Image (cartoon, rainbow, N blue to C red):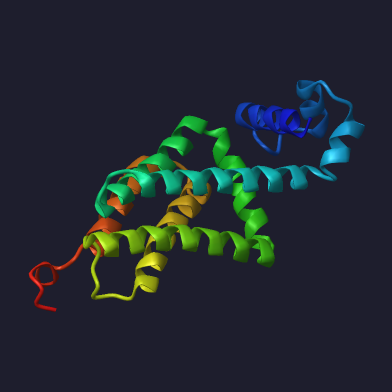
Length: 195
């Protein structure tokens, strides 16, 4: 039942936006009574929180798949940002409003924000550690700082898309991937063993 509610909500949010979608609309689409909705989600914001958790889980799986792919770090970084911007673009313009609400929801809840940051940090740290093991990530900088750079680029991309009208998310995603990949790459002297 909860899955049906979430699916109906996602469809409606994509069609008419988060703010314009009423609980009654979701119940009608899911073919359930409002009491059933409220048995699963005390408020529409609780539903939104569940959608955020589902989105984070999907992102974690995508990062794990990227880590498992037979790619160098540069290509992994590009694939990650390509995947993120493709999802945003495919979701359509109403997804922007939903993303704004998700950002506000997570930003307002310190415990929620901390948990999500830690999970993303660990996932990006895995990409850095994989690259160090492959020898295609610089050792001139602390792995923690490199991880935070990836996380920061991701957050800036999402924040700007959510808050700036006509933000060219795909182009900025490509630029972010190139900048991050360049910053992670070993310097020539590292490749020749002179550091």
